[in-house]
Length: 285
Image: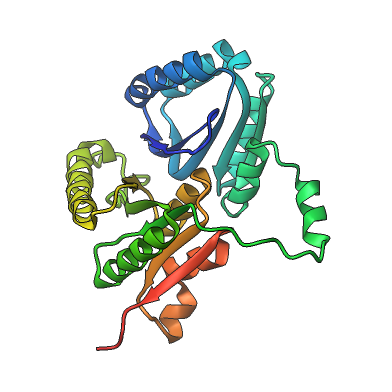
């Protein structure tokens, strides 16, 4: 399936592709992309592959045909993935179109956004060699990760306090992972994941309603909310990059020992975000 990632750029658009793409997925996706091309052409595109299992044959043909027909309508296309075959398919596809296309590993997400925005990596390297300290600016867009736990309740409260202090835009984001189908790739007689979309969608809609109620209770004028599919850490980071956010606020479970070494959402965000990150701890009870 495809899901749009909201982007705070005039001519860059981003989508997440997950699962195994079908012709039905493309029939729902291509009208949206056609509409964007009519309004914004030429545009740059980021496609993030997460838990991605490829294309059905007819879907692959739709993908190829659309790319050939609209070659001149794209400026740059960045593909984000974590599998060697995804890199190989990107390299193969570049041979059929003149659009600039590049593959980036998932941990290269910031570099992908810089490339789409036309920021030269050499210029950034030169900037890092200077000893001049950059001035601090007020926060303008604060993203807060919400998982409906007491930790995220405190994170929302802290983010709201900072948003009011800086008169900043506030975005609440919750992530929903697709129901796992561990045997689908091995058992051809098993029902496909598409037979369980109703369950997935019910979880997503419930999350939307819960997040909406939180937003309505905030009494803050400049707030938006998104429920996106995907793994929490990577989805929050991707959203923050797409929105040019300058602060991420997240709650911490205060893990120690083995659990801490294995990682958590907040640890992953701190280690990979390019913007400031505030971690809000829940007091010991």
